[in-house]
Image 1 (cartoon, rainbow, N blue to C red):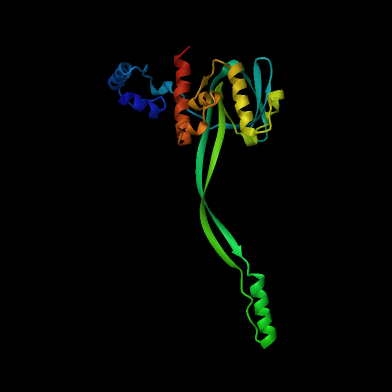
Image 2: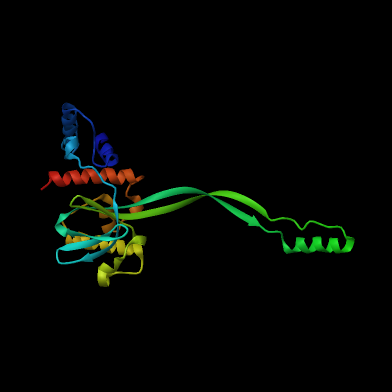
Length: 232
């Protein structure tokens, strides 16, 4: 049970920087708990590069071309080269200080003006009052990372032209991203899927996939890319 609990929060890596004997013990204990595991060297774990922004796609027979970067250039990729499709929806909390300005009411201005006219004594009309308030704001960040041929490309609904979906294109960005994921999964069935991608294709809520930080998504991606080299 402890090994299974550890596995759920390790994103594939039950241990790191272990000597060979400790790694073998961990593999054996995992097998005893009903989980298949194997040991790899640091050199067998691929490094993760920062994702390049993708802005559009053109599908051909067995290939697709992504519009990448600013200014955009086309990056052609054989669909069979796609290794991993990784989806996540991460919560981003921030604190924002907002300044509001409360103007002097018309009634107060008129009262001051009346007193001045009646007495001849100048009366201040009052000044606008500024107040500051710090509020918490929550934003959900949704993205799809495509890994293949040594590259990593990130698709964000608000910055992507989904015209390449053809008749499948809808009017809502997140829905189009899910359609894009489904199309990639159909055309590149050998590509691995991270938990977020699997859950989204199954219709499960993405915000319950268990990712707290982008580092969780990256850790899982490193594990799955390592598996692509171990599983033919």
